[in-house]
Length: 415
Ligand code: TMP
Ligand code: ZN
Image (cartoon, rainbow, N blue to C red; front, side, top):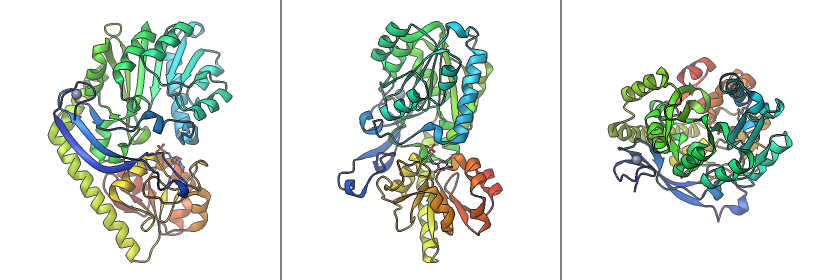
């Protein structure tokens, strides 16, 4: 057990047991050959990076059948429009000469705004099915993993970039050293490297351990990001907390000394120290909180079942794979999970094999309880599922603690 960033062998590890691929929704015929890995995390006491110790091969996770399409969520569409607008206003005054690169550009949800403005852009997206959707939207996209080699090839063909952006991507890439080299090769002298990912501070304060799954090899903090990219001459000059994915952080980096470091960095570092993100005790306590959450979740579902009531899951998120497998909850306790993604419907959840149904089925079904797996999309979901509470249904939430809700407001406040 060694830190992936600094090779230090000391820290706190937490085990979540055998875990399948979070997005590995599968057909019954494939149950026997399902792949599992040992999901265990390490908090490195030296570079402060929170990470997965073992991770499946990237090819097992990001492939031609990758089931995650960014544009399926309306709120995410708004989020990425704002991100694109922000880049255009603040960082590329000279649009005509600008070159914007996005790593893990998914279905083009963010880059399409640059395509529409005729701004030179390139998406680098390893999953070929989502990359193809992006191309259909007019977004110039190549299907590659990003690293030093890809960066050099892109630089040779397109020149250097003003912005290298990555949303919910950096946390997927085990070899950040290669990314650092790639950014160094591809970024203009005055360019910026911006990325956002689920935030460690939110995960610790909400016990939202469901952020941990195969794809998230890192859960970053400001402290760790500073340490990870400093060896590549990159300096964190600004941070912006985001509400997406249940609490994310956007990190702005530049070549060291090329921009003034804003107060946001100092403020957030202090917040992290106040929260104990730099201390091993915090992660020991987090391990205990996860165990309590598991016990409470199983106890609640078992009690409801004993009462003869029905529970279903709402949204087959990748995060739900962690919760269901860690808590060992299967179709005996949760009948089915409804989801809007056609690729997931008709299949079974990874590991625990709960059937996935179209979300229209939920509307017509009137179950007694629904576990809100997509708690980070609560606002959007409540807007269309008012009928559920009206007919006496109750929501179950497992963050920040396992609870049952009969009103929207109480649930929203809890998140
Ligand atoms: P995420 O939490 O990783 O973004 O996963 C989102 C999943 O939730 C995706 O499979 C689509 C599903 N979903 C619904 O089923 N209904 C909804 O209203 C929303 C917003 C998402
Ligand atoms: Zn380390």
